[in-house]
Image 1 (cartoon, one colour):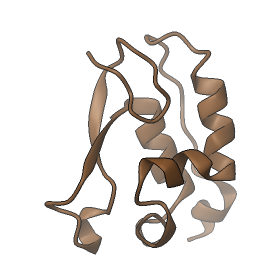
Image 2: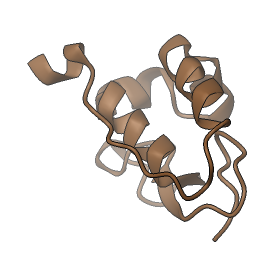
Image 3: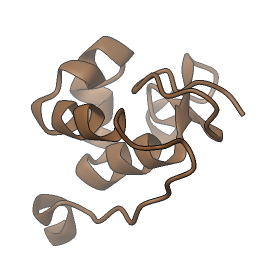
Image 4: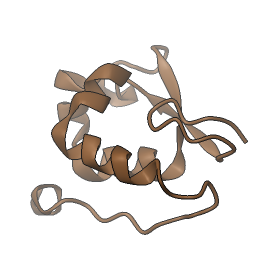
Length: 94
């Protein structure tokens, strides 16, 4: 159990997120410990290409419009809550 570096929730199960996707050369680069819902939401909303191009730091992720509304909502959720994450309409078409 730890603290999500994106939403700030505490006592959550975290996973390692490569800020620069591994397939884009980020295998040994910077990582962040994210709660499972935040990690899944990033990959549901964006392709690895988008993440590499403009969302490869925590401030960039927090400032993104789509992700910011999710973070605002998830911060209010209890750490034990697991939710179903769906790909965005744009990502489903790709």
